[in-house]
Length: 108
Image (tube, rainbow, N blue to C red; front, side, top):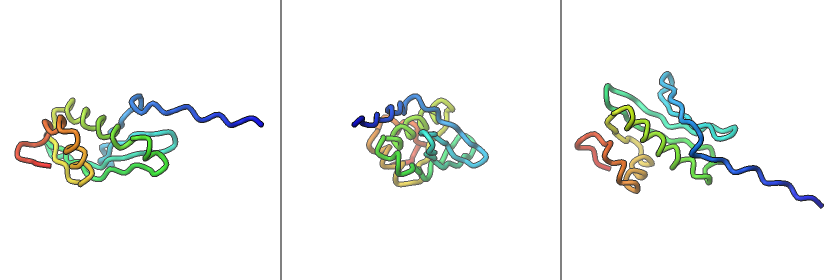
């Protein structure tokens, strides 16, 4: 009896983060799924809100990859970060190097 071949692993680092400014969200497509991170902008400030990762791809580490790609985008665009959701704040507490992007006076 032949066994089914496992699907090829997804290279999350190769996925492209898309900014959808009209809906104020970043999107990371993982196969047929869309992980998304809501945001608001005010001048040179960006407020990161709810991070939504579809359950079928949660275990792949999509949330961490999406956060990393988003924070790189924030840095490249020279924005000041204001996290508004506990998930985002928790990521920044765990990955302290990214705290350099925080608006002066904002703590996590």
